[in-house]
Length: 347
Image 1 (tube, rainbow, N blue to C red):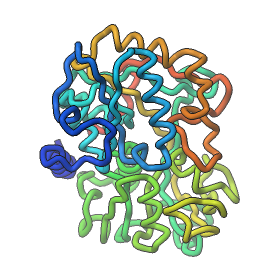
Image 2 (cartoon, rainbow, N blue to C red):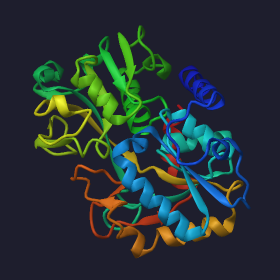
Image 3 (tube, rainbow, N blue to C red):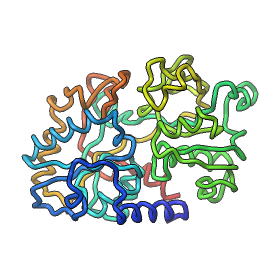
Image 4 (cartoon, rainbow, N blue to C red):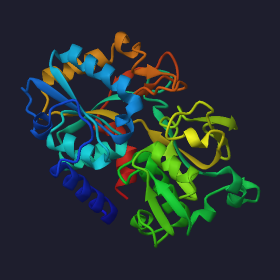
């Protein structure tokens, strides 16, 4: 494990052991016990992004669907740190998790019984195009500084202040730092995880909105975050979501923490595809019967028609999944599908 990952993994374990877990609907004793496959209760853990207050309705809807599938009591565990979620699913204290590809791979490396169960499909209902976008963004009033021969690129980010989401974030760290490493031909990717090496300063937002706020406040010159988590707050005012050099404006009706930045504009100087993250199961901590029941329920039309779970992403209240078309469904998936991210993280 690389130095940056080792530090954050240690921090995650420390936080877990000291009980620093964000609000959880289950009792602390339930969250603290390692689950068994025949347990009468199931614990579902979420990343910090989906642990936010504005995801409450979507988390509750998922809790209800899990109960319908298994008949068991379902506890929801929210977190404020990626590594707490990774440790919870790897240890079996949580039997299910909603994760990014990077976090899943880290959990799988700790415990091979952690496996992907379901994946959001692409627009045509297959794994083709089952991805979202990772950005490196700058404030629009300084965007021209990042042009070379009339085109945007990342040449000028060296020596600046950067913001990422978490070193365990796929789109908020792993993917953009892979691009930076390739672009600048860096031997050691760990140099990007802390200030004083490649960057003058490195900040972490803990969530994708948090990383964007670091940029909007001026604490960072360039920030990494994804499109799906910022859709409730940002809209494309010039260009498109998948085109470098597009302008993103904070919506006039944006809720906190974007309220004070309404109308502020950002420009993306990099856009990269990211594999959709999996709905994960610890197969040692959850029985095959329950796992199969969940897979059957979650791949049904009734499930994907649930508007508290699936939306077009344009509303103020986010949902756990966003439908890019009416054909979008959840598909069963195996570890093999994540080979590209395995290779990216293993560098």
